[in-house]
Length: 387
Image (cartoon, rainbow, N blue to C red; front, side, top):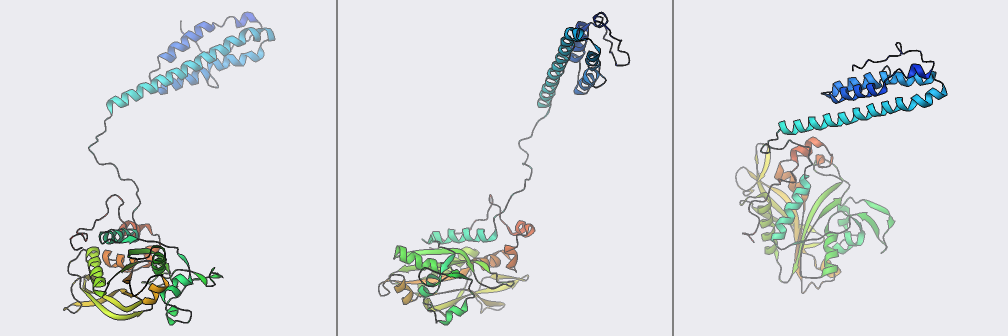
């Protein structure tokens, strides 16, 4: 039997159940289900959906005839038409599911993935040069037996100044442009953003006593800003407290550290007398360097032809008064301390000439100078052989 669609224009005028009984719903259902089952692709199935259930579809046309029927006719014919619509709707959904499953099976059978090919690039973050250098410093000093210590960045002036032999009237306080807080500290002093990580040394000596061997890396703050200074920067300080410590131990430690960090054996140091209130005697440490292709390269003596000396860091033997205020007997314990800017070390090792981009957050700069967290450069020699 061939199904003939009934459109609104061709729909017969139904005045009684006799006229409506002329519609063979069983034949319509059989024809519709047969055609739906024979649909070979989603496009053909969509065409049948429109033909049967669209606004001008044949089954939709039958539904519209219900409005012209008497209540008795509607009660008799309505369930047949609604049942036909539900049957066709279910058949369309089932056939769509079957076609999609068949398409997926075909795709799985025909498509292949070459697992030997490299994975596509995906956006990844990078390790900031400062974080990289911090990790390298921790690795080097761990080989030398140093532990990592930390302390608060918001300090009181006793730990930041007084305990480091800087009384209220001492001119050394004028050497730091300090960010002070308006509120007073509990001990009657003032709260501030620490200007160095030296307070960590005091806090560690008070808490742990001696002997002691620590480094204190972290953020510090001073009111300064130009190509080589920023209001916030990073510093690492080292402290060794033990018996019979002298300047020779300090020089060997710094020389070993710098050779391992810059991965060069020709690092030459020069110690110059200086002054720091928390060390006595105090020395500035210079390192020999040469300029190659516009970049400073450490190595060799600053007295060699084509070389010069560059100030690298400050250091010295811990002042007796600092030991006393930290609860240690200076007649029994001695020690040395040193401090260097982490950002400065990063600039020298990785060829950067301006400190400000460190904190600008420019993704182009970070992609260029950053390090992969999965493929970070390692220190070639460490300090195991030298230690």
